[in-house]
Structures are given as structure tokens and as C-alpha cells.
Length: 640
Image (cartoon, rainbow, N blue to C red):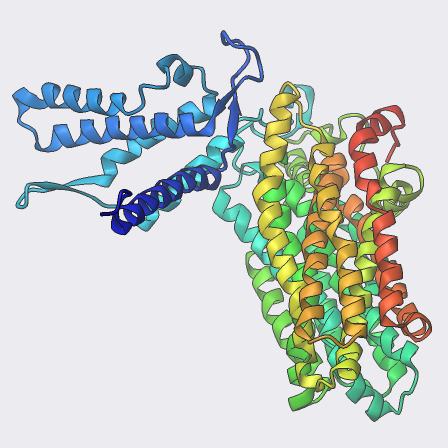
């Protein structure tokens, strides 16, 4: 007879342990999904020391207790006889409280206000989730999609409310100042409804996707273009692709100040028309020179959405919301160049390289029409300036002035245009923060376009791929982008809220940068991995997988840096983004031109290793700005 337990009993014991582990993981995952942490801090003023933490598992059981209490109250009031309502509720409350007796009630009361709000919301929502099945005599808990979405949005709103709202300059006609009609003025873009805010964000994000898409969509068709125009220069072939991005360097310097004078909407509309019309020129180009010129002007028009988009985010969203908004907006500049070669390869192979531009014409035309129909002006200064001009006429008070011009009389448009043109240059030359961040982003962005202009040739030469399918090699970068934006959108605003609370409720732009160093470490990994596996002609899936860390790391660098610049210069967000865009576009246009000579001299292995070492050397840049950025901004201010 066997002395130990039977195999079936041992198996049941293992299954029980495994089930308990899954239940524990489920509790943690639900809490993380709600934007919580493994620990929450006690608020200052409690009996415990500030910074003392409550374990997540304690809070999960406490919330479970509150849910049971609310369900009991709802079920008792629905199906129990009136004279037994109080008795049944009291019994069930006692049973539910016994399940979490290890945690003291005083700890629940000591939780931060945000968690207390979650408890109250859970109690309120549970009444709408419990229904009575009278015929069967049982309770049935139902949950609709709308209630689920409402609960998620409520949790997000609760998190955002932990920061003090941004003060809005108000109107005072007695002193001759025109401003907003109070802190809740519905005409103030910061007070727009969330649906309207995200509609405007999606509109500009759509054209911001089409424009970078055009920058790389032509890359797989270069070989067909070379045959038609009898071009044998690899430098001209690469420049024909990258010259579009050179237009990104010139356009922001002009379009950014124009948006400060005339508003975001008219400048964006005119630039979109320019971008659309130059696609016709590219499709009908008679020679290589004409194609390069047309591509450049198309890039100038296509740069408006990228430049003005940063200003729109600053106009619509408060600091604690800009991380998520920037993550959505950044999908276009990063995903567009990845998807472009995939679609461009099939179009160029099946219909010819000129049809790449006809497809871009159709897509950009449709999106531009949608923007023209639904877009709204969001520039705070322009809106109040228009309001001031209207009140001067209607009230016959020519002395009225905008609250944004209260320091003195408004400047003439020529001066505003000149100052706006010089402002990005001042940011790049007279500050320390902007050139360092611009340099880092420019190098990373230049490396991205170096990959875009060379991946096609590498896979055609090393793996004998047809032009039709070479665009699929960009999927590695795309997967990295998708993973990166998911993580950044998750942690960016949450990190700012947590650090702001630790900083006595005072937000700082540098709070966007802690994760940058972590993400930056992934960028050099890709170049060593991709370069040597492609050089050794390892199976094609290996170098494609090697590009995933680059996309992941670049998204984690791109979004926080752009959001940091918007937060650091909120009044001149468009100019700050223009400085970033201009500098990175120069690198994106020039760096790919060096790729053919570099690979011919060093080969794929050591050539990409050189790029990896450059990316490795620049990792400390965001760490230095995070540590000393505030000191530099306050000690060396620049008049813009």
C-alpha cells in the first residue's frame, strides 16, 4: 500500500495552487489596468508618515469588500421583504467584512482621495449592474459595453483631477481687458468637450499620417524610376527620397509664425492644399530634377500638420493630458514612414511608380476636405484677438485690448512674423535645452530615415527579394512603434501625476523625461543585431526582429521629448515643435546620403555597428536634461 497521497490528490493540490496563483495575478492585472500602482502613498496629514505605502493587495480586498456591500444593499432593496431588508443587509455585510478582517478600516479612510472616489463610484455603479430575475428567484449581474466604457473614463477623469487645473486669464471690461468669460468658458479650447477635443486631434493626426507616409512611400519605386530616367547615381536615388524631409526643415520656420498671427486653421488649410497639388507635379514629373524639386515643395506643404499639431495639443489639452494626446499624434510621423514602403512596393510593382503619387493625391485630398469641413480654430491668442476686435466695434471702445497683450499694445503683423521666424532659431542657438534635445532627436530620426532608404536595397541584395515584397521588411520597425506607443501612452501622464503630487502639486516639464533613458537603451541594440545578422545572411526573419527594439526605443524617446518641449514652452509650442522638426529633418535628409558610401566601405556589420555606437553615446542626453533642465531654464531664461 502506498504511504503517500494518491496521484489524483497530488494533481488536485497542484491545480488548486495554480488557480490561486492565477487569481492573484488577476487581481494585480485588474489594478494595473485601472491605472493603479503596486503601492499607493498615504496623503500628508494622516497619522502615518508621508510616503507610507499600502500594499495593492490590501486595497484590492478593501475594494472587493466595498463591492460586496454595494451589491448586498442593491439586492436587499430589490428582492427582500421590507421587514427583513435591514436584517439581510446586516448579515451579508458582516460576512463580507469578515473576508477582509486582516485590514483595518482606518487604513481605508487614510487612502488618497482618488482611491476613495473609486470606491464611491464602484458603489454607485453596482446598483445599475444588478438585476432581478423574479421568475427564477435569482440575481443576475449584467454589464453593458457603455457601462464598462463609462467606468474606464471615470477612472481616467479621477486620475486627472488630482492636479490643480490650469488658470485661464479672465475678462475684465472695467479695466479694458478682453479675455475668457470665466474659468468654465465653453469657447476656451481647454474647456472643449472631450469628444470635440479628440475629433480635432484625430483630424490633424490623420493628415500627419499621410504626410510622413509620402516621405517613404516612394522608396520601393526608386529602382523603377531609375530605369525610366536612366539614373545610375545612388546618391541621387537616396536624395530623391530624403529631399521630401528637407522640406520639413524649411516649412516650419515660415508656417509656425504664420499660425501665431492668422491662427492654426487657415495656415493648415493652405498648407494642405499645397501638399495635395504638388503630388500632381510629382506624378507628372518629366525628369529626375523636376521630381526632386516637386518632392521638396510637397514636403514644405506637408510640414504644416507636424508643426501646427504641437500647438494644437497645447491649445486643447492640459499638462496632465498631453502625454496621451502626444502619443496619438506621434503615430503619424512614426507609423507613416513604416507603412509607406509596404504599400508603395505593391503599387510600384503592379501599377508603376507614378501611381504612388496618384494614390497620395487621392488620400491627402480626402483627408484635407474633412479637415476643411470640421476643423476649428484653437489658438488662444488668435481667438481673443478676434473677440477684442469684435467688441471694439460693438461696444465702441477702441481702447480694449487682449488679455494676452495686456503688457502693451499689440505688435504689427510684420513684427510678429519676424519674431515668429526667429523664435525657433533663438531656441536652437540661445538656449541649452533645445539644441541638446533637438540634436538627440535629430540623430535618432536621421537613423530612422537611413534605415528607410537602405532596407529595400539590403533585402534585395542579401535575400534576393522582389521590390513588391521588400516593404514587408519594415514591419519590424512598425511592431516596435506599436509596442512603444502602447507603453508610453500608458505611463506618461501617470508618471507626471505621481511626480507632481510628490513635488507638492507643482508640475515640471522635466517630469516627462525619466523613461527616456530606459527607452534610449533599446535603440543601439537594433543596429548591432540587424547589421550583423543581415551581413551574415541569417534567415530573413532575424534581422527584421532585430529592428523591433529600434522602433520601441524611438517611440519612447520621440513622444516624451516632444511633449517636454510643449510643456517647457506652452505659449510658443508651435515654435518649439518647429525647432525640433527643422533640426531633425535636416538630419533625416542628409544622413541617408552617407549610407551607400558607409556600407561600401565598412559593410553592413561594422557600418551598422558604427551607428549603434553613436546612438549609445547619446543616451546620457535625456538624463542630463532631466537632472539639470529646471536649473538651466530658471537660471538662463531667454526672451522669445
